[in-house]
Each structure stands twice: as C-alpha cells, then as structure tokens.
Image: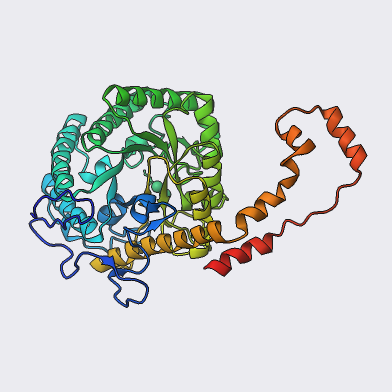
Length: 452
Ligand code: XLS
Ligand code: NI
Ligand code: NI
C-alpha cells in the first residue's frame, strides 16, 4: 500500500493488494471547458465561496452501503453488479477486499469523508460476540486505511432494519428482548465510531414505526424510543464522544408509517423528550419528497430550529413514489436548497453524504465515478449560483421589503409581543380594508433562472 501523507491538500491514492478501478487516476478539477469525463468541471475543492472552500462547505462523503455493497438486486431480478471485492467466501477477507476497494475509490475521487452502517463493513456474525469480533478486526483495518489516506469518518450508524429480528422495530419493538439486542448492537456501533474518530452518529429508523396501528401502542413505542436514545447518548458521552447525534427523518418505507416522519415531527419529538442539546437532523432529499415536502422546506425547518446538522444527497423520480436514491443533477432545485444552506450558515457538524446509488443497469466500475463526479459538480455549480444570487441580486432585499411593515412602528411592537388583541383590532378599525399586495412568486423564480 502507498505511503502515509497527512497533508490536507494532496491526499494520496490508496491501493490495496489489487487495483479495483484500474485505468482511473485521481480525479481533479479541470474546469467546465474540459471534455474529460473523469474530471470535475465545477468542484474545485480549494475554491473559496462565501468565505469557505468548497471542500469545507460540503464535506462530501461516500456512502459505503450503496457504493460497495449494493449489487443491484431488486424484487424482480437478481443482482447485476459483480463487484470483484465481494468474491471471497471468507467474511473477514471479503470485508478487507471491500475496504480496499472503498478506499481506492474514495481516494481516487478525492472525497474527504465516508459513512457506514456497522454491517456494511463486514457481514454480521451468528452471535453478538462473533459480530463484535468481526467489527473489531475490520475497524482496526479501517483505522489503518484512514491514517494512510487522511480520509475521515463523517458518521457511523447501526443497521437496525435488515435482520429479521427487527421486523417489528428495534428500539420500538414490542418485545424487550429485541430492544436489548438493538442496544447491544448500537453500543458496538458507537464504540467503532469513536475508535475511528467519527464526527457524528446517525439514527435512521426504518422499522421504528408501524405497519398497522391496530396492533401498535404508539405512545409506549415513542417513550421507549426516547429512553433508548437517552441511554445511547449517555453511554457515548461517557466514552468521550463529543460529536453530534443526528436523526434522519423519513415518513415511510420500509414501515407504513415511520415515527421520524419529517423535520418538524422529529423536532417536536426531540423537544418533548429533552434531546435538543445533543441531537440534530440529517436530512435526505428523497425522504423530503416522500413526505410531500421540498428538500428546501426540510432544510428551512431544521435551520430555523438551529438543528441543520447534515444531509444525505440524492433525488427521487417524479414519476415514481418511492426512495429511488438517484444521484443529484437538478441544478434549479439544488440552487433552492443551497440558498437555504448558505443563509443558515451551512451545516452544523455534518456534511453532504451521497446516499445514492447508480442504476441497476449501470454495471461498469467507472459508472460509480460518473455518478459521484456528477453529484459533486451539481452541488458545486449550484453553490456558485446561490452565492451570486445572495450577493448580487435583489433576492434578499425583495424578501425584506415584503415584511417591511414589521420593521418599525406598530408592526414592530406586535412582532416583539407587546400588543394586546384590543389594540390590534383598533389598528384594523383605523386602517380599514388592507390593500392586496402581490407575492411576486414568478419574479423570485426568474431570479434563479437568470443566475443559472
Ligand atoms: C434509507 C436511509 C438510510 C440512512 C442510513 O432510506 O436513507 O440509508 O441514511 O441508515
Ligand atoms: Ni439516508
Ligand atoms: Ni433514504
């Protein structure tokens, strides 16, 4: 394997015993005129925008599960992707091969972070202790790879949804034995996240919800969920973990109804159960749209509560109603997203994780590169546009003017909460019927188009 270099600027490419993406070199920025598909056209990690480099704005991360584990099987057909790193029948060897492939890919792409579920790294064992042993081995290997490459762990998480034991939920399971098992699994996942200096820890509760309300005691399950989160947080803090915990909302799939429905629901839950201090949100584009929201809406809700932690970047399909997890490419929508992102001052502790997969029929090794390069370029381009709009257009002043009646006088007194309903009614009586004021939506929409 290549030598150690911790210089933040030029991270080395790390290749294991075997080169999995041969013929592909380190991807670099060549600008929009380049016709090299294996180069960034907009993502220039050193370029400063609104006082921060692109690298620091985004903290891009590669998702282990989609990129190195997802082989393209679907309910109608067998896997299509013959990943060579999955060929060994020995789980330890297979996990090491997979990690070699992952670090080769991540370092060739020059992405600074990755994210994983515990059993993305290595196949779950037949017992808790065997799983713990395997996680120990593979996290040692990961630590070595991280040191060599300078790649960091954005967040760790536990897969509490794939194993049949979690079919009725994990922390919200009606059977205490399953809740305990989930606790043991999360404890290990926290331990390896700390060992690998993970900056955050995520909870996505795919099975924390119900399939039928008829057999479900919702209040009990939510109380249990909160108790569980408090326990995890107390344990992790005791072990010295100083990062954020993130909850990732999603309204449904795989459960009919998931408790972490959307940003507003999760914020209500965190408030109710006194978890606001330690938890923030990890928002995902396709989860927002499943909840009938735009992604910008979800970011705004989180930002307004001071809880905009991290994001899972992907996109849905307008004609399909499920979590298709495609790579982002819609610049107009990304600009809307990044306007909120920039105005909020960016993400708190998190980054932009590509929770996205290449299509089932994208079967070449280079497709994984095209997908990520495209996603990173789309974000970079949208960032430049959103920043232009904020700095040079009438966007901000238009909105400020719209609320100008609260800037001083009686409007301000109202806004500060120093008015009675009687006074409010008197003012209306004095003013009479208020004039109609246009919302000017089309004008705002045109502004984005103008700066694209
Ligand atoms: C599934 C989720 C999942 C989380 C991590 O829809 O997006 O991938 O990000 O458990
Ligand atoms: Ni996700
Ligand atoms: Ni998702």
